[in-house]
Image 1: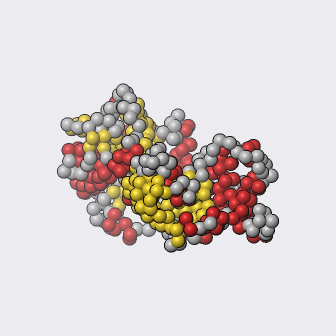
Image 2: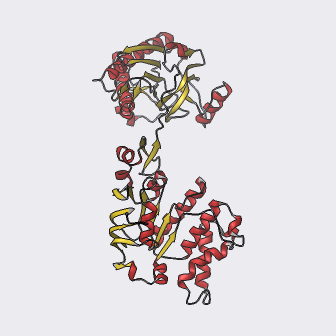
Image 3: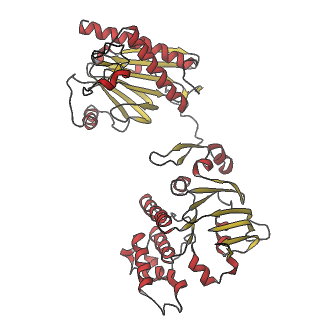
Length: 488
């Protein structure tokens, strides 16, 4: 365990680091964050003994580090400073071997199998074994960085102090290096303290984060407690947005530039829609922020084109997503800029209407069929294989909405769709109970993100009222058109 208490120090009489206290336990990885000049690197140098402390203590396993002889301290603590531009003309093997110096009784006079294994393992872990006999000054900055990390690992210290270990590395080697360091902490119980510029990497790999501001600790805690938008903005003086990582329970940060809004007409009207026997297409001049359950590009993102494609009722394909990708490509749609849906309903029967509010307007587009209507509360009784959905609903909002509003808009739309089915007395053919939808309905909510900011979209809000009314009316009319077409 490393314990820092009341640490103050720096280069001059005026301290850079001021009254810093924290402790890091065995097997823990702590990331140090902060803007340039906040004292991150200085703190690391004081902890390692490179710079003197003015007040306070640094203890290793309950013992002040100043009581350790330098060689003995090096057995417990390895330091990776920031990589500088010049590199010594040593081979990679010689450079990594320097990490074993604290374990020698005389300079390399007692080289052992254990020493050899340590440097070979370190070179393998950092993927620099291939450069073993190359000279350090022949390598790129990223390759040199990995060599020095290998040197620190070869030291086999209990504590690693790392100053921007991913500097100069591409994203693949950033991941490989931090995976390695993190696994060393987990498997060997190493204590790791690392300075980061990249808040997202720090969040992903560190157990806790320490955010510095003007030489002092602003906050220390788990990543979700530290990487809060207002907190980061107050320290870095930059606009950011925080969102969850797709695979890990860790926050990620996105920078929000102050570029202003592009002066392009992004307002969506019914004129932006094209309807044919093959599909319904919405083509926007600017990308719309979208959330959908589409076949292609489902989930959230920014897209310009939206396609609701007609397929035959007996459509069957082992890989419908790939087939839809091919369809879009063949018809001139960018597969990276298009949301694609399918429906067995004749797309020429789509209902498209605009609903105005004081905030702007929304466009509702619905294709609806009821041949596979289902009561969701009775769906557990069904064993039939789902086929192409027949109620596809698009909600296009001329306005700027929050993440909550996207979710609430989907809830409001679903409730309105269900009410339309009830109004038309659509029933589940198996249970004869009122249907709530079809087996594979799809829903899209997209917004221009221009104009008035709309925080919510529940039925008590003006936006929610427009969505509720619009989806109900359009779905009801779309069902009527379906009935007429089917002679029902």
